[in-house]
Length: 218
Image 1 (tube, one colour):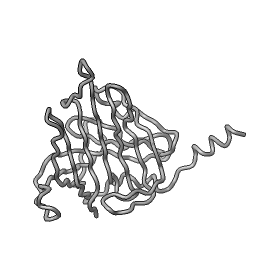
Image 2 (cartoon, one colour):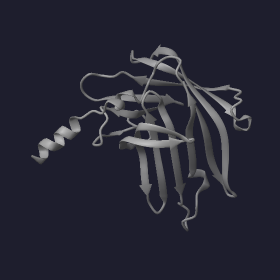
Image 3 (cartoon, rainbow, N blue to C red):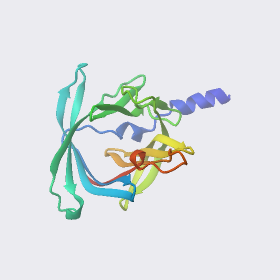
Image 4 (cartoon, one colour):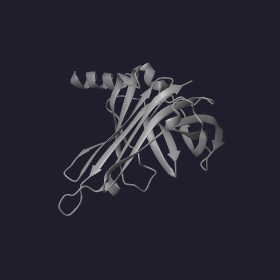
């Protein structure tokens, strides 16, 4: 009886989870970003606004249809009076299947990451770094139906992906992303602190904090 109940739970696909990675041309998201590096004097935060917009499609070297993701930055001091400067071209891939497992991918700076695995359920984990020479990194769903508040806006039926959760003496790191239906990524959080000196000293070169939070979208 227990095995039957477990299988039934795994087979349930929550409808909102099929809509967390929209790839319609013209969709954009604007986020506030705080990107903090460290030096010997302490943290060095850089703040800016970031816009990501799906601008069209291309065919990759394997014959897949991928989506162009144009990325722009605007100086944080301008506030919401944005002055967008082109920053980077990334791509995303998403091709839903009726059976079997499939993935949403993001490629940026020659790094191809499997950011989501479908169908979404609490039992799923995968190697997000499968296509990169960075070592295996287990991603898993921390929550598949939660309500979160980002920049004072409430989003329902969100999905949280944990990309790392390490609590060691030398390295402590928490990295996760949160996706909302019909919007996509609404929050990205990375906090990595490394103490690998001979006497356990803090290593500023290997430590990093990155917070990206949605401000607006269409």
